[in-house]
Amino acid sequence: MSTVINVNNLGKRYLISHQQREDHSSMRDMLSSRMFALRNKLIHPFTRSQSSIPVSEDFWALSRVSFEVKQGERIGIIGRNGAGKSTLLKILSRITEPTTGSVRIKGRVASLLEVGTGFHPELTGRENIYLNGAILGMSRKEIRKKFDQIVDFSEIEKFLDTPVKRYSSGMYVRLAFAVAAHLEPEILIVDEVLAVGDAAFQKKCLGKMEEVGNEGRTVLFVSHNMNALQTLCNRSILLNCGSVADDGETGTVVGAYLQDNARSMLQQTWDDVNSAPGNDKVRLRAVRIVPKSEGENTAFTVATPLTVEFVLQNNVPEVQLNYSMHIYTLDGTCVLNSVSQPFVVKRCQVKGACHIPANFLNAETYRVKIMVVQYQSLPLFEHRDALTFEIHDVEREGAWYGKWAGVVRPNFTWDIEIEE
Image 1: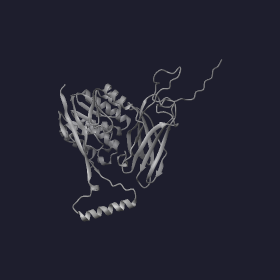
Image 2: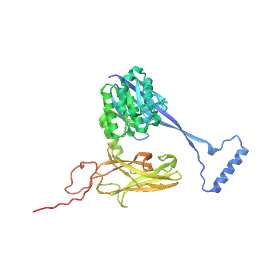
Image 3: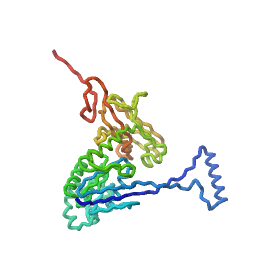
Image 4: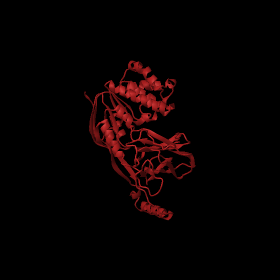
């Protein structure tokens, strides 16, 4: 098989600026500092105040990344948030220029990286299909030949002549994936954006990507769903802090990645509110999982009742919010989704806790995703890998050897009557 992608010593650098901040312990300190700064300005009008000088630093999103992709390979790209996955895909899609190194690509590339990428919001769905085909270098006749298949796959025929700016995110992704997969690119690049769609559509997309690979075309797929990756991809690349940490058979790479993640991450705290996950409305300041009873150790067993604690910073005058907590196995299977009761808050800090009973979770390693939802329906933000924790089995005589079947292991009440 011929090489269709050659990445050699690739690096991407961003310049990050930090504004130095004045630290004042009282109103008097602040006024004194301001008066002192004003006096210096009058005496030395052409000298910049030291407190206003921005401090800059280089941040390498990618560093010395090298690999080759053969025609027809289906490759998964995995790694934690911030590992450089999206930056790599943007460079391969020619959206971003690399700082160092080179990328050689043979063939047409279709990308699905973010909701909204590649579509003109003022054009209709029909017009955007032809626009994307033209960008890929296809003639109008070639696009027309695939048009009905694209519409059937996307299931949005009713809205085909509506400007896409009025589409929901799910409709947008349906049409965008259908266009990218059906206009016969030699290389198909798909980021985590498929998570926006429903489960049935995700399954449909995975089937289509497998079909594309079987036709001899190349697929690059970024996902946190390890089940999907192992089903679709025959090879995976693990990124860690912008560098290639592993490259090989998907089962082996995913296994090493999951084992590394299994080293429990039981709490996260963000001292600087500006760096905390969230946005200008709300931010998650802290999250942790602890035994419900004080004094217990962190070697959680199936018999340990657990509490997940949250600290939220609300920055809007008054709003109704909910916490939402998803618990996943490391291979991406959703075990549960629990939502708090709605609470109305003004600008303040909110503490919350969700209690998980004993004898509910199975012996397994789990990931926790935290969401904050407004008015019980509008997700404001999510933090995918908020926590990682492991549940161990209880050692006792006559115990079942090995992990019990099922994603949960509830201790139901049984009534047994013995008739003699």
